[in-house]
Image 1: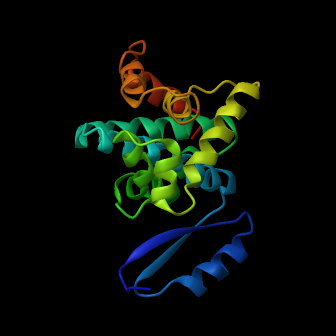
Image 2: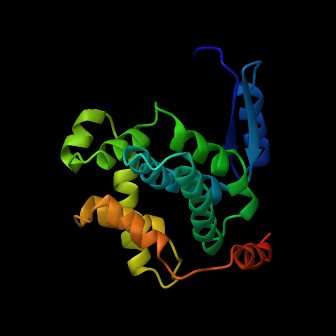
Length: 201
C-alpha cells in the first residue's frame, strides 16, 4: 500500500454482498464501485491483457502514441463486441473494469503484459521475452484460450487484434506483418458499429 488514490469494481449479482464489500474496502485512497454484471467485469479483466500485449508490441516497434491510442480504442470495441454476444452489459466496458483497466494495462511500465509485448516488438523471442518478464503474463494464456474459443463457438465475433496477436505469439508471424494486416483490413464505418451496439444498452 503506497497511499495513492485509485478505484476498483466489486462485481456480484448479490447487491447486498457487493455493497458490504464496497463499504469494507473503501477509504480515503481506495474507492470501490459495485456492478452486477459479473460476466462483463470478468471478460474486461481478461481481454484487456491481450490488448496490452498488442500495445507493448506497438511500443517495442516504436510506432508511437497514436498507434497505441488506436489499439486501445479498437481493443475496447473488440472487447465490447465479445462481451455483448455473451450477455454482458455494454456500459460495463466503458467503466473501470473495461476502459479503466485497459488504459492502465496498455500504458503502465509496471504492466507485465505490456512489458512482454514490448520485448516481442523489440525482436526478442517468445521464450526470451517471457523469461525476462519473470512473472506470469496472463495475456499469453488468454490469447490462446480466446482464439480457440473463437474457432469453436457458434457465435462468430470479429476480433482482429486478438487473432493477430495469436498469430504473432503462436504461429511465428512477424509483428510488423501483423500490424500491416490490421491496417489493411476492409474499410469500415465506425459510427455503424456504435449504432449497432446501442441496441444492446
